[in-house]
Length: 113
Length: 116
Image: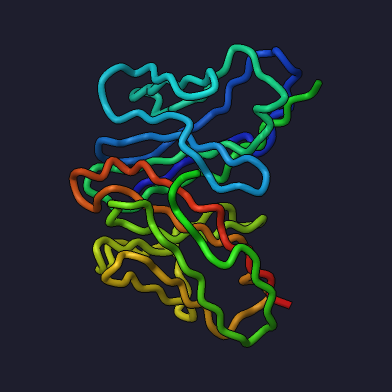
């Protein structure tokens, strides 16, 4: 079975400060990992994905994430956040052979001016 | 615009009623997924269809059912509605259902269901 844990339900951060949103996953097989962002009153959209290869993945809007197999983590980072980054961020996992994509409970990022 | 279309965007109904939510996937996508998003449960996977056939099932209640039609659009039927069914229902699509499917999903904007 696969699962995703996002320990932080809310993360407040000042504008232009760095941020890290944490994600840990559980799976017994190889994984595909994703971060999605949901802006208010919108659907989810893909921020970045790890399929294979380089463990550092760059996404849209200046976000990046690092796949760490030994720690089963896929933390999302941005060196300097903007007000427009205020949204909810979801980590997701799909394990090889499984059809369904499992989402974490989400982390609300609140950027403070 | 993800290319995934969901209707209706908003729906208000009473307990005990039945509703149907509709989803048109992106052009060329064969897989359709349904998710329920509520404040207390987060984003819950309900069911997945690939080219008309059910492929995976999640936490879908027996009162709920879904199908995918030959033109690949999908419908989620919710019956005997309860107050707790109030939620945002998302449809997502992806390219394939097997090895070609890496899991990247394209989401619609959701159907907000309010049960009074």
